[in-house]
Length: 161
Ligand SMILES: [Zn+2]
Image (cartoon, rainbow, N blue to C red; front, side, top):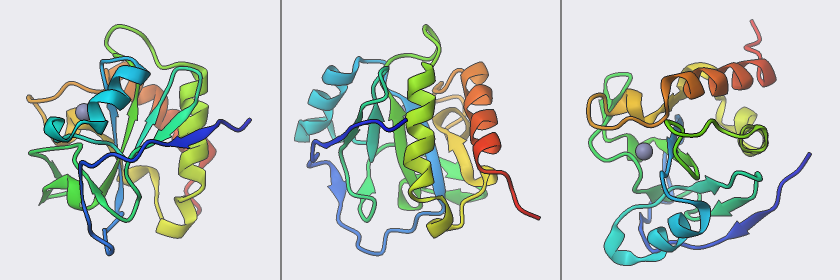
């Protein structure tokens, strides 16, 4: 199954042609798909993701992979601060603490990852979420939904030993 992906270029990014893409930080946006896009197109919001995924799996491409999106704020992963500098930001529209991810959202995220997985040498170990990189400050994703997502990722992209 493939899902449509449409560009909605956000002004909220740092141009960084050599943007390191060590892995991915997943989020939920709390707001619905259209409201989230509108929010990220406003310069004064100062926030963005690389991609946002609707409940039906449709993706909005907000910031090019080559640029730094402003998604994680104060954060650290594997002992490094400022996760925006080295993690791509992928968000699910909605609130995973209130409503589970849809199957289409997970499938769409896997498709998005598949286009990049080998090129960047990603493994499940470099997948994380906002709750884990900004502990105590952020609560996305809901822990059970993170576990569900990571299981789906690990199943789709087995680590070859
Ligand atoms: Zn977040």
